[in-house]
Image (cartoon, rainbow, N blue to C red):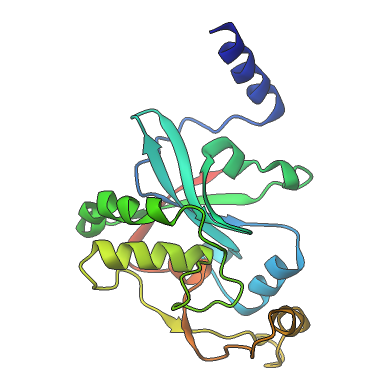
Amino acid sequence: MYIKLLLVALLSFLYPHPDSFNLQNGDLIFQESCNGQINNAIKGVTSSVDKYQFTHVGMVYIKDNDSIYVIEATTPKVKITPLVEYLYPEKEKACYPKSVVGRLKAKYQPCIPQAIAEALPLIGKDYDYAYDLSNDKYYCSELIYLILLKANGGVPVFELNKMTFKSKQTNDFLPEWVAHFKKQKIAIPEGKPGINPGAMSKAKVIDIVHYYE
């Protein structure tokens, strides 16, 4: 017990404490990172709600009624991350991401338990660097899209859109994406179906319910 209390105190010292907002199972936490080439590339080709530039999203998973985690597809694997670590990642200590909570509307709340049940067996699956919906690998918004699709009986909760990797200003492929897909040794999947955190944040199936300071 003493060791557990010591660890809690240490975590409270190392990280800012999440505020008192009550998260619910299945809430989506959108994040806008402030660094990284791919994060900047995502910002360059997508748009989000309230003028944010979201680069990531995960689903809240409340375990044993009190332990709060986030199921996320991130590099290099799909994983379950404690809430504090998700909101305040050590690797981004110099500039923590902005986090915003979206909640599925009442019509889709019954899907949440099954969506989480669909997600848990995917823990440990590889991150989808190819942004391909059919390869049994997962990028962040793809994971959320697919688990809710299955939970809703094969009817999409979020709609797919045509992916673009071109600058909104110049209509040219961003150099970061050219380099990324060259490294993957695949063609840029311009126009292929996909979904991104920004598009999810603007969808009519959710309400934005909280902003973490």
